[in-house]
Each structure stands twice: as structure tokens, then as C-alpha cells.
Image: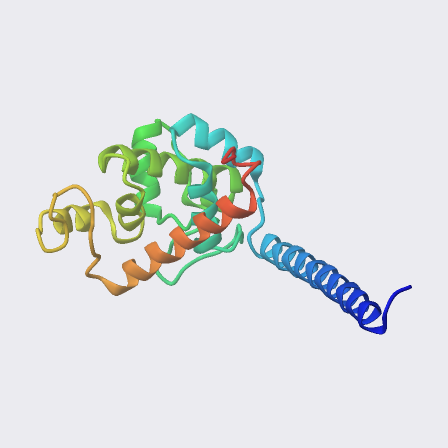
Length: 199
């Protein structure tokens, strides 16, 4: 026959088990809710185009997603105050230069086409990664500030002790931009491990 003390102990254990189970359910529900909100904010749009051009030009898919998210938030018709166009916010001048590498002759309005915008972002990043030894941070900085400016920074030992990578970025707007893209890339990596073959 159980004592009163024994019954209370069993009751306390049952309450503790129920509380732990309830906490686990709440934590799981919160995790999935947060993940759903993040997936809505960081979608995998244009997956076929991004996969194709990432492979064609040797650019990580997560980088292309991070750039598109940061540049336009997936707005094909975006136009910046500096005149950059489309999903990936390439300027008409850069677009003309990139076409000398692809042999195409397209009007600047073609940047409002998702396929063209993703392709030329991949072309550009393919060139930047090659030029800067595969260093993503430096390539991202060059996408924003320009190759010429980044090469000037790389010659400054206070900015780049090894002359190949940027230890710090002296221009605050470019520094913030690089941080935003890197954060977006990191979020894509965490949310879409399977889709991005990060498992």
C-alpha cells in the first residue's frame, strides 16, 4: 500500500514529465513557426535558373540567393537610385562590359528579365571569384564597390595585409553590404541544407 508521501512523489514526477513534454511541444512549434517565417522572407525563387547558372559559371548557389535577396528582395523590376536594374541590380555599364565576355548584345532592359539578370550575376561572380582567388568576401565587396576600388584596397597593407583578402573594408556602405549578403547566405545555408547540398 502506497504512503501519502509516495503518492505525492509519483504525482510530482507525473507533473514534471507533462511539463517537460509540453515545453518540448512549445519549443518545436516555435522552431517550426520561426523557420516558416524565415522561409517566407528568404525564399528559393528562380531555383532552376540559379542552379543552372551557378553550375555553368562556377558560383555557389547560396551566394546567388544571398545577392538576389539583398539586392532586390526578388523584385524583377527593381531600379536603384544609381540606375542598377533587375533582380541582381547590375548597372547598364557593367552589363555592357559583361557582354564583352559572353559575346551577347542585349539592351539594358534585358536586365529586367529574371533569366538574364541571374545569368549575368553568375557571369560577374564567376569572374570576380576567379580574379580574387575564390574569396567570397572580396568578391562581394567588388560586386558592390567595383573591382577597381577593391584592387586599390588590396594594395593597402592596413586593409589587406596579404594583398589578397580584405581584413577590413574602409567604406562603411560596402562593409554593411558585404555583411548583409554574408548573413543572407548563412541563412540560406541553414534553411535549405538539403536543397543546396550542404548536408
